[in-house]
Length: 397
Image (cartoon, rainbow, N blue to C red; front, side, top):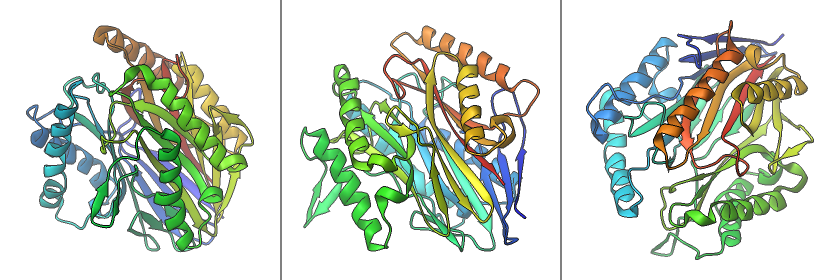
């Protein structure tokens, strides 16, 4: 009989760090999932190399707590604070980070690296730690049946496909194509079909029907007045493409995606093999409110980002959706919260809003250990005008 045990290490009022999930499925196979909360490296000087070294150091503590290393990491999210409204300055920051990213990881960890990666410039306000040039979130998996590589986590009986984020960036002959022009519909469809659906089809996977989660980033700093126009165009293409097989997920504006000549970047999660997909049957902001994947007696629920004006109310809604999917609730089954605080031009007001958010967030978890968490300031989440948003993953037998 399947069992899931969630260990929330080093809990404070808004997150645990790391969260460790020990899974024994119906067949007796044991897998451990390790999810440190988002980390920064501000214990060192305020430059890219020093903060990246500090971030690696802090994330490594979480991995070592659970007896794993960087070779077990399968997902890496890099969130850069937007340094300036000037595109060239952002491009320089990106290039500076990328120049030390892999070499420093190799030097510090000394193990083969297998993780995917998705990056973006979030917002000039950055993160709860105002000194942070970036925040990084990782996820790891370990088990006798687990193989990681090429954007896949192969569990033996089923495969979790988590490719790196993709824009329209591709090679055509000897030429690198970075943009398809101003048509967002064409851009979105190209990513869905050419970057994802066709490669998956070569593996015998129906991308439309087997996508369980989708994160969509929309770059806006080149023309901020078009923020929600761009988001709504992108959302409509997503809705039309998936139809009745809508995954859960989220869509939000970012300053820039890494390919700064285009606007949209997506990252799907797709499953194949001996795994069953159940969708909520309810649509909100274009996404299924939740998606559940079941395998050998184990359930993992991905709750789409819920937007609103009070963190406790949002978390209650997420808890209700976990129960709808067959779980006990967020406090019992939640493993990770991604939190989004919408920021404007006034830094003081943004920081006050974060304080209000955290106070309400903590009130929900009073008396219990919260899930892991990454929090970031962004320009919006799911729907125009909402000041906050949270998405969640939960696991139960």
